Length: 229
Length: 276
Ligand SMILES: Nc1ncnc2c1ncn2[C@@H]1O[C@H](COP(=O)(O)OP(=O)(O)O)[C@@H](O)[C@H]1O
Ligand SMILES: [Mg+2]
Image (tube, rainbow over all chains, first blue to last red; front, side, top):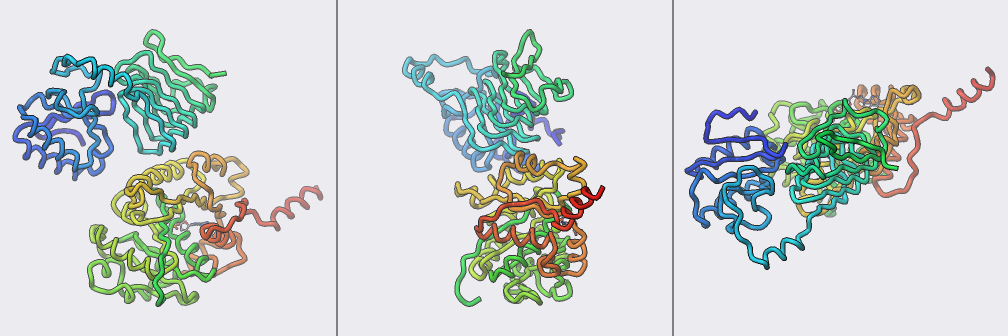
C-alpha cells in the first residue's frame, strides 16, 4: 500500500506509527497527488498521525499558512511540521522533541516563553475507553485512561501510560527514546508493549501476569514486568 | 401517519457479518409495532438485501431506497406495508445497484422524511466498516450493537463503537449516540461447556449497557424461512420473548436482563437430577 511510484512522495515510518510526508514543489500538484492517494487508501491518512517535513522546499510564512490550511481542510491529524522556522508555527505543531533530523537549530527563546512552557499541560486524560482501531498519539507526556484499551487499539506517548481498566491492545510509552517511561495497568492483557523503543510482544509475556495489575519498565534495554501489589 | 412525528433513528450494526443484524432489525421492528409504535425498517445492505425476505415482502418490492434517493419514486411509493402489522413498514434496499448509488445527501433527505412520519426508524446496516455501514449509522440517535459471544465478533463490535463515536452526525455535533449491546445466538449448551465467551466478559469488554440476550434457536431460523419475524411467528418462544423485552427496554422500560433459558428445561434438569 505504501510502495511509492514517485520519489516526490515519501513516507518513512517514524516514532513507530507517525508518518512523515515530504512535500515537493509545486505544492498544489503535490496536494492533488496526496488527495489521489488518500482516496485510494481511504482512512489511512485520517487515522495516522502525520509529520510534514518541509525542509526540501522554500516557503514564505504566507505560503506555509495556506499550505497548512489546505492540510487542515483534509482532516489529517497533523502533529508536527519540520524544516521551517519554528516561530512561524502554532505551539502544537512545533517539531517533536527527540526528532532526529530537525534542520532548524532551536531558537533562542525568551524567558517569558520558558515560563509559558513550564505551565503547559504535559499529560492527557481520557474518560472514555479506547476502542479497537482507535489510536492516541501524544508525544508530549503521559496518557491516563480511566477505561480500557481494546484489542486492536493503541496508545503512543512520549511519557508513561496509565490504564485504569484493562490493557488489551498496544501501549507504546517513551516514544521519543524516553527510557524512564513506564506502563501501568489495572488488568494486563496486552498485545504488545514498547518502552523507549524496546519491544515485548504477547508471546513472550509470563502467563501469570495475565489479567493482573502490572507495571512495566526498562532495565538495561530489557522490558521488566511485575505484578503490582 | 398524518400528524408530524419525530422518530428515533436506530442503527442495528456489528462490523461482522452473519451475527444477526437483519434478523434483529426485523424482530425489533415487529416487536415495537406490536407495542403500538409506528415503525419503518430500512435495509441499507445495497446489493445483498435480506430484510425483505425476513419480512416476507420480497415479492412486493417495486421501488427501493436507491429509487427514492435518485428521485425515481417518492417515499410513499417505496414503503411496503406489513401484511400483519398495520403500523410496520419496510423500505427495501436495491439488489441490482451498487452501493455508490447511496449518496450522503440522498440518505439525509430520506432519513428526514422518515423521521417526520414514524415513531421509530430502524436501519439494518451492512457488515464491514466501509461507506455503507457508515452511511447506515450516520443519522442514528441510538445504536443497537449486535455481538455473538465470540472473540472476533466482540472485537468487530468494539471497532464499530469507535466509528459511532467519530463518524455519526451526533458525534460531529459533540453529542453521543445512545448505545446498547444485544447479544445474539447465545447457545445455552455451549455456554455450559465454556466454548463461548461469558456474557459478563462481553459486556465488560464493550462496556455499554446490555439490551438483551437472544438465544440460538431453531425458531429464529424457521421464522426467517417463513418470512415472518419471530415475535409474530411464535410469540411464546424464547427468542420472541427476548426480542420483545429488548424492544421494551429500548422504549425506556426497566426490565431486568435474564439468561434465555426455558423453565421447562430447568425443571427437567432438576427432576432429572433428583431421580438419578
Ligand atoms: N438467534 C438465532 N438463532 C439461530 N439462528 C440465527 C439467530 N440469529 C440469526 N440467525 C441466523 O444467522 C444467519 C445470519 O443472520 P442475519 O440476521 O442475516 O445476520 P447479519 O444480518 O448480521 O448478516 C441467518 O441464517 C439467521 O437465520
Ligand atoms: Mg444482514
